[in-house]
Length: 537
Image (cartoon, rainbow, N blue to C red; front, side, top):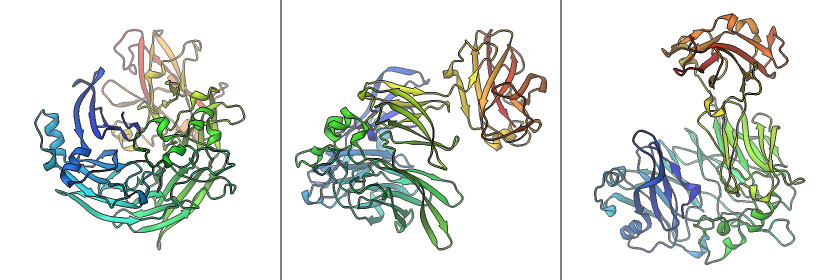
């Protein structure tokens, strides 16, 4: 089976997947022209465990768990599972396969893996329980006992190894509402990186957020997290923390409690917790009954650089949210996106949380059927800047989109959101392409089919402040340059049609722009179809 949690897509749209039988597969998804293949094509298949055992001369008791490329394209791997008990003395390993060997295999050449695979043996009882993080400094791997920075240099070079503490595997107690427990013996939190720091949680009571220096591995800051819950509510952080570095000395981290999701069977000595099936690693009652079987808690902690080092402080903490979707932060909108369940109604919902305050600013009902539990498959955003995807247990992929564009003269006609994009245009790009002043919003690219000779498009947007007369609308022409749209072809108004003199960031406005089919600002060559790309300055 494919270990979906630790699979990823490479630069050529190939899926790189560890499997439950210790292989790593590379699956081609598109042809050389970028066309999507009807079936995946397997272009690489390596038995990593067999290669590691041949090199070490030892039998590995632990199976392959996770893989990732480093910045040179070497493929790092780690063995382990979701409960590696030190007293069971299982033999594990970490290491990498060289990029040269991978390229040779992709070119159809025979490769001696014993000469191109490099292995670092772990102490029996130590193993990975998480994914691997990659940085310019090397690969960061968190085991049940230590955090490592490893570098590829004709062998595995240990740049540093920093131990951390754990209370061990956490299980529900008699009388608890939950029936499952924690997934990991050590930290369940895959490390998240900034240029200077490695961030992860330990598994103590209370759980602590740790910050290590990327270059030295020294612990530079720590603080308890989600430690204000009622005494009977345990805490176990089992997913990567969201980490946002504002480049001005503050690193914000979002951590989520996930105690209760892990299967009680993970404690069994004969359980192979490296196999990622729902029945194997997750509590069956959580799958069937929903989020009342996991404990709440989401907290934002800021790590602040000072003259004396680093300090941590809690910004906000939500004791009512039980998130299982691996939340996503959009730095463009300032919102954290999640997928939760209303415990009173049983309704599964998309939610948006304000990054600054922690308050819920929007929620949208999906379904009250138990199977819409998304079961830890992370949400992800589409490249259009206007789509959020969430897989569910009903084998349905949900898509949430903001209908930010409409046709005010023909409200009955819906603009195809698959042809509507909202992306960041940097100040440098704005100026380079001919814009004057400061870029003041997203670049909105919209295609409308079956249009009249002249069509008005309305674009909804917030975050605008200042005098209305100070704004100009720019549109891209076929030459790739921005041109100012004449004042008589566009306007800013409120939803009720009022033309304001002054704009407020918290108000939703509409930018109305009239485009002629085949005119200056129409980027489409197709008759009765217009495509515009506009941005406010």
